[in-house]
Image (tube, rainbow, N blue to C red; front, side, top):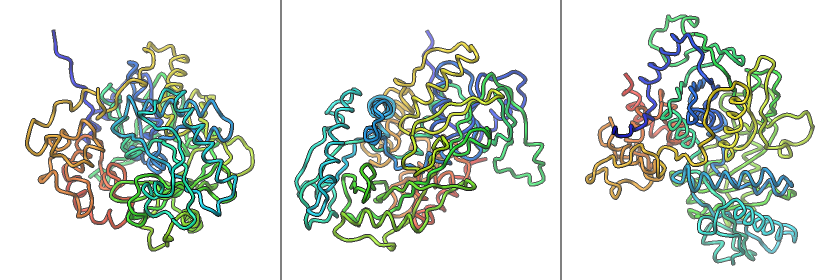
Length: 534
């Protein structure tokens, strides 16, 4: 009896070149082409490939290049939807959060306490509503199957406990605090990378720097836009046509570029990057109601590298869609003003180490009003030429969105496919996934007890393999002083996670680039890692 084979989840420049060459020569249709390498597109690729379909994912830039890397890095349980009366989407969000936490990505998702401080000057309604919402959220968690051992129930705590969660909270006039438990991602871009690699392990061809310049329901024209050494190569020579039984566009705010009849109304969400020491290194997320609103809050969320992310805004972002959105001065001032209402020492512009902003792909129904009032539900649309577009929705529900999209493809095409498996399919690094289990040796620098805790947090059961596979010397040495990212991680980004450029490593695989000073300090190590690409 043959031993089971270990799936090949490594994404590299060599694998990309090999698979791209095969696609150029292909004369028969693939089962499914997915356009877009964000969380929705990679989720669709994983769902389809794990059902036995032949899948090609094409991304114009890099994995998690767009909205998927600019989130608050929360796996929400749907509490906001309860406040607007949408019980169905609230419940599905809670169910999907539980799947991430308990089965598919427990190494990338962890419980997080949300703390709403109540002061003597808090309006009566503002003192009561968060608690009622948190109790409803606890009920929602239980109905979704998440027990108290995973996410404790909502409760009221005294001023001392509030300060234990958030040492920088304003003590003067502090009466008590509402505490709720939600989930936080170690990193949203890391989740996308894990989903993409898991899909590759099931046979999906994941090709970045491959721009789709034209698409229909059965055909795409692709341009290879990877960095090339031959500057004289004609653009036409880098283009080819690929046939497919079905094509899905999962391009978020750019959905209208492949399907002009699809209308998306982008909403910009801005975050600030702050030194966690400014709030006393909080263990929970400080949650501050937006004045005059009943269901909007700003957060100060613990993040990696000793940082906090303060967010978020929800403003209309009309006009041309930029590759990298920028925060406005008004948004920065708004966030500082709101969060300072609950702080003992006010944050200033000097405390802002960096900013980042993302564009939410809200489905445009033609209604007027604020983007904060638009639905976060996703939509699956079919163009006259057969192209299927999926847009809208929330990161937490990516798996459900993918399941529905692939169900539609199977129904439309009659392709033989097994039922959806992704609710119980561990991602790379999660317990139960076959890659990296038992790798790394039984002793020395790669034994689990000797690995940096931050490395284990980001890679789970794959952590020892990251170090063992390093092609850079001094693998456990930080990439720069004061950063808890190792040289082995930069090497792994190139050899196993599909990074092709310095930006891929700093801005999407490690997230060092969220603070410009950190980015500058780590750039030399990233350049050394990119030099490993032959």
